[in-house]
Image (cartoon, rainbow, N blue to C red; front, side, top):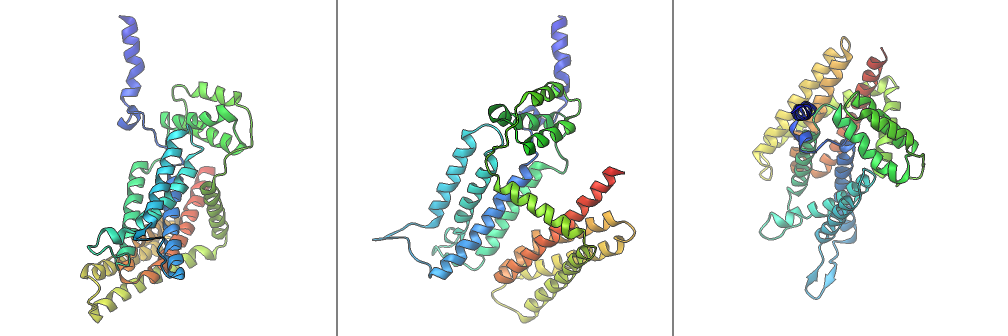
Length: 352
């Protein structure tokens, strides 16, 4: 009888955990980086594919009535990514799987025009907006799955154990050991944390590891953004660009409306004007608050650029694809600078 009560007491904390954890689905602390890498690879692949095909005169691969469309190569690469991710334990293969899968998905989604038109039209005009909309929707799904809080307690401990799967097999590099220790710090006194700390001490050092291109690029972007932020004028230039971009978006939308362009749906014009005005309003609110409360001001700047990325750019891709590519690049640069500034502020708060 007592053993039964002991078992119930031991299981009580587990029953109070979120359902996903009870199902054995802890979040990967590096998932945001991997998902971002997947979609960056997707977008770059689409742009390179379109550019190379245009430069080569849109050649036909095949002959005698056969055409090997690049959507097939995309499917092969996505399947290869699945095989890699299903074949190895631990986190080491995930960046490679994300990169291969992203390239495959880029080749796949680039031909979306053929599958939404009755005449299989690769050059269907709204294709760029459709691709961008698909990417944004999937990014939002990934963001929803990750939530707004980092893994803590048992979930962070699960991440540390996940890293140790690779460490037990082949040792831990200094970078991987630092990642495990950071997760253990977030785990706190979760049940089993002391045993995992003891295991970390027993795992051998080994600097040899599989290259992680996504992690390397992410670290470079973070370092570059922080260097830019240290220059006092850089955040203000970013905010100025964001404000001017919002005004230009509203102007383009109004010009399309006044010009009565028949090839532009009304929802595109309305979306550009409304999202441009909201983005501009967020920038103004940020400028009004940034001197008295820098963190709140930059949070408003972040909202402004996210509105532009999630709404305005979809409409702009429908109106003018090349202008949208430039706008997208500017938004991503501004978002990186604003995010770096917020990170610096958070680090300063932690040191106080």
